[in-house]
Image (tube, one colour):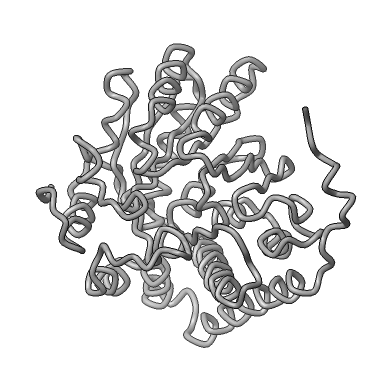
Length: 347
């Protein structure tokens, strides 16, 4: 690992290189249908987030807005490993998770713009959307708060005697939270069916991971609780799928928790208000050029002649049309009635 430094861009590249030498499973050999499915799913997230960023700049989205651009392979790959009944819970960089779970882009975008057609009736915003139907139990705005909740979902599954698994996502910035380790302890003690997915995008807000963490291989964070963990190339959907298959099966068969550290990268700042001056433009451009998760799949599709350039362009156009429809809906849908201030409030 690189030594601690204040220089922009001095920490991320060594961490990305570590993904190539990590003791992670071999990449899954995804066939034509799976690759095309992954491409469309990741592209939907990318175009949604680009549009959300544009609408934020126009003042149509208020409050906080954390974009998932660059990290799409993590949630798309993991969703390829689950079954109906499994639960997903994450932090505030959550739009991608919602879309990967099958939530309607119209409802997600309408929540961002505070409209009544949003998933929380326009009252929750970016970090407070749920869909029990899709097994999505929220983005959560308090750093690390979703980890004990995701552990609780796993406890429910164990208590009820089903074989459902909780995928509990958190970032490198939450990896030093005390509640995370309390959750690890309980999960191991009770052999709970939970997979902890650490989305290590290498910067907790504006701080590089090796300036905030004494040990930067976060896949080992469960070692003192005897929880197995692996480090995975989170920019390659095949590697994510392979590691996810192993971890989910481990939890589903009653062996207890598993930790997956996904080495990934966000192209934008921590939130829309973050200019990201703590890293160099060259670092971001290098990641886009050499490791972009969507371009990797696109190249494989074309190389294997699973689709033509024209078919790829049609897919992109269809996805753009769908996102534009969501944007139109979220712009023109009615705002919540003032009486909604008094509903869904619990003492």
